[in-house]
Image 1 (cartoon, helix red, strand yellow):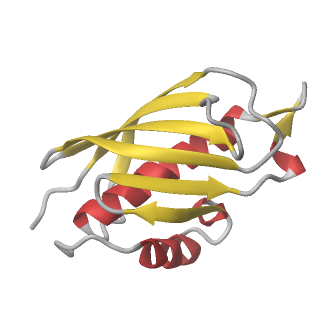
Image 2 (tube, rainbow, N blue to C red; image 1 turned 30 degrees about the horizontal axis):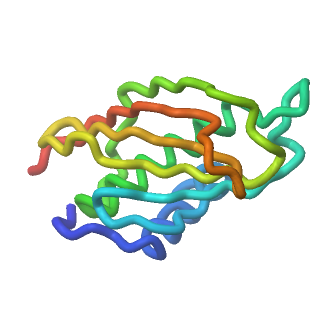
Image 3 (cartoon, rainbow, N blue to C red; image 1 turned 90 degrees about the vertical axis):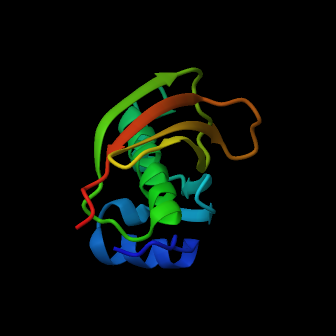
Length: 140
């Protein structure tokens, strides 16, 4: 495992290769080890009844943002896994791109904890807030 964090371009390349139909849908716009910003482009398939973007769309974006944050902090660690994701849906998101900003709360040897605010593009107020914990595999 690298001891140096990855750049957003390196993280995006990994996500496209490792998850050709999944996590690569979210694009990492910024990541510096303490903060990561990811965007998922709006698509009508993300809508649920009532015209709001679905919870699974927001949860996938949240999880990807924290995965990117970890890679930017400690380097490529594909076996890091989510152990907890708690999300509060605060308001109905607009039918627009969603932007997630993840921030490091705790960077331990075995656990990495971050919080994430999600907002609709063009909006200041968050539509969701999450706290996410990842398990980091032991270094050998």
